[in-house]
Image (cartoon, rainbow, N blue to C red; front, side, top):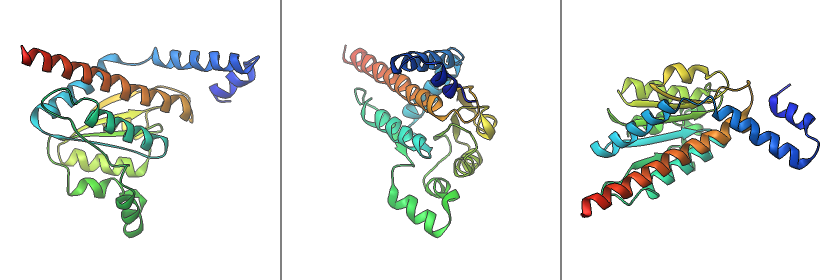
Length: 208
């Protein structure tokens, strides 16, 4: 039985389920490697300083997180003189449908990277299972191109955990998509908020 189902069975009311669910998220957050988050922030700051691009990808709920994270990076951090050149590979439905139709869904992220990515770019893959074939194919290509690879994964981490150079990992029961995706969205907000405040401080100091 999944942990969320266990919580549902234990809950004495809807309000109690809410309390138990958020308690479970807090338990998962307690296992987080905060140093790993710091290393991802450093990689994004490095990309900004060197004018490199940041590509983010994911399927389903992870696609929504990729879109949200890319938007927060590209738009929400504009206080500084240098922008974050962040793009979600999950956002362009014309490209994704064309690639799926002409090559296959496994190529939807790889083909977008093929003519755009350069050495030193940051490529972020978001996958709860860490086993999405299209994500892993793109990550292999990013590694081949000497990009900095970042994985947001859950469950046991899957192949993504060992493939990515930097990992922000939510250790959870297999198939626990909801809580893992909740925390992946939280990681995006945490990182974006830090970078926004960093850029504001940087701009303030530059104006003195």
